[in-house]
Image (cartoon, rainbow, N blue to C red; front, side):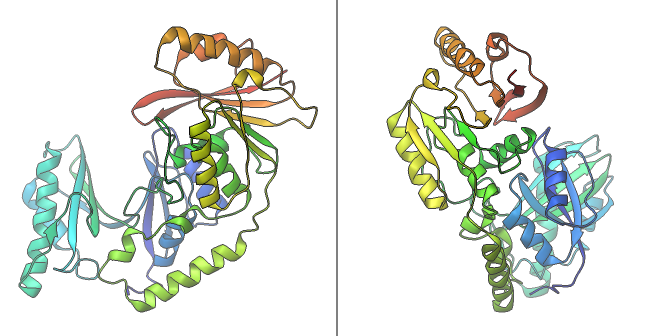
Length: 377
């Protein structure tokens, strides 16, 4: 195991437009020296703080650790800079490796070539030390390395996450175009949800928004559902590291209280709703599910609520327009409620009878979207 008290710089990668959300979340979780940065959020701590970020962050895409920064004005400088890093605590000849690269305004212009030079430097170092070299695996590598090369300055990262963090592990199935769990968590924070106000999703699909809300309100760390993270496959992750990780997971489980406000989810598709119920059971959360059309939505005379929804879009425009008109009519009845609508079509905003109080530019996969937040008069 690497020295658990070794202070490192970590980087929580963030989807475009979500950097402030990730920063605020990491600050709320008690991470140190958190600062805003384009593309992600740096923070500092020992190795276990990196593990904790993987377990607790709901909004970050990946957690990585900075291995080195150096000038790389050409291929040889890049190769030599990577060779200066001691890779033996993380990679052995029995493990597999993958390298990816992002380049900007640098002498090296081909990301595949840059990744190849990084890979060569790592495997050459290990072969010189032990006579054998690790293999490359693009599908399921044991160790993932990332190069960011901008204006001939290289930053080399080691990925703690393994699979992207949106893959929580509780979802066994989904409907068409499922919402990523990390994006669902971002939507909840941008909507200003406090974890106590009753919440409704009238087009829940596979239940991601409602489940993420229930996990957050119950203080259930999302990473507890994962079978394993990338750092658990490193050469340095020995029995003492496994014991420390088990203790950390136990502490996080003890903090979960499982109590949350009323969370309701509806969908017109009975089959998709059954999948949402299965996902909620696997996540261990309580959600009230009901098969219903959005036009059936009515205020129930109780306290004001938050409505969050990811409506369908990009199919037949006439069908979408009818649906959006039904949405606007139903939502207009919800006096005093707050609405957060992930709008992948401009028709949604045009159909609403009132203007959003806030608008955020996000991406749902490759599709640009607006998160429209309304306070219903």
